[in-house]
Length: 69
Image (cartoon, rainbow, N blue to C red; front, side, top):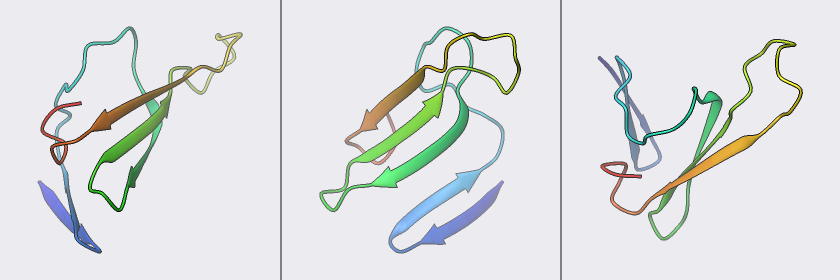
Protein backbone atom coordinates (compact mmCIF):
# COMPACT_ATOMS: atom_id res chain seq x y z
CA UNK A 1 0.00 0.00 0.00
CA UNK A 2 1.22 3.51 -0.83
CA UNK A 3 0.34 6.45 1.41
CA UNK A 4 0.21 10.03 0.09
CA UNK A 5 -0.28 13.08 2.34
CA UNK A 6 -1.87 16.18 0.79
CA UNK A 7 -2.55 19.32 2.85
CA UNK A 8 -4.13 17.54 5.81
CA UNK A 9 -5.63 14.69 3.74
CA UNK A 10 -4.07 11.22 3.74
CA UNK A 11 -4.78 8.92 0.78
CA UNK A 12 -3.94 5.21 0.87
CA UNK A 13 -3.49 3.58 -2.55
CA UNK A 14 -3.84 -0.18 -2.70
CA UNK A 15 -6.24 -2.94 -3.63
CA UNK A 16 -9.78 -1.62 -4.24
CA UNK A 17 -12.18 -1.89 -1.29
CA UNK A 18 -15.93 -1.71 -2.09
CA UNK A 19 -17.49 1.19 -0.16
CA UNK A 20 -20.88 1.35 -1.90
CA UNK A 21 -23.11 -1.02 -3.83
CA UNK A 22 -23.65 0.10 -7.41
CA UNK A 23 -24.30 -1.18 -10.90
CA UNK A 24 -21.11 -1.37 -12.92
CA UNK A 25 -17.90 0.44 -12.05
CA UNK A 26 -16.84 4.00 -11.34
CA UNK A 27 -14.38 5.35 -13.91
CA UNK A 28 -12.11 8.43 -13.77
CA UNK A 29 -12.71 9.32 -10.10
CA UNK A 30 -12.07 12.79 -8.68
CA UNK A 31 -11.81 13.47 -4.96
CA UNK A 32 -12.50 16.80 -3.24
CA UNK A 33 -12.41 17.77 0.42
CA UNK A 34 -14.64 20.55 1.71
CA UNK A 35 -13.37 23.01 4.38
CA UNK A 36 -15.86 21.40 6.80
CA UNK A 37 -14.14 17.99 6.35
CA UNK A 38 -16.62 16.17 4.11
CA UNK A 39 -15.18 14.20 1.19
CA UNK A 40 -16.86 14.15 -2.22
CA UNK A 41 -15.94 11.68 -4.93
CA UNK A 42 -17.29 12.14 -8.46
CA UNK A 43 -16.92 9.49 -11.16
CA UNK A 44 -18.21 8.44 -14.55
CA UNK A 45 -20.44 5.39 -14.85
CA UNK A 46 -19.54 5.07 -18.54
CA UNK A 47 -16.32 3.28 -19.44
CA UNK A 48 -13.89 4.75 -21.96
CA UNK A 49 -15.46 2.87 -24.89
CA UNK A 50 -18.03 3.53 -27.57
CA UNK A 51 -20.40 0.92 -26.11
CA UNK A 52 -22.27 3.45 -23.95
CA UNK A 53 -24.63 5.95 -25.52
CA UNK A 54 -24.88 7.99 -22.31
CA UNK A 55 -22.30 9.67 -20.12
CA UNK A 56 -23.70 9.39 -16.60
CA UNK A 57 -21.87 10.60 -13.49
CA UNK A 58 -22.07 9.32 -9.95
CA UNK A 59 -21.35 11.16 -6.70
CA UNK A 60 -20.68 9.91 -3.18
CA UNK A 61 -20.32 11.96 0.00
CA UNK A 62 -18.50 10.88 3.18
CA UNK A 63 -18.83 12.71 6.46
CA UNK A 64 -16.49 10.38 8.40
CA UNK A 65 -13.19 10.65 6.54
CA UNK A 66 -14.01 8.00 3.95
CA UNK A 67 -15.00 5.21 6.36
CA UNK A 68 -18.48 5.17 4.83
CA UNK A 69 -20.06 6.80 1.77
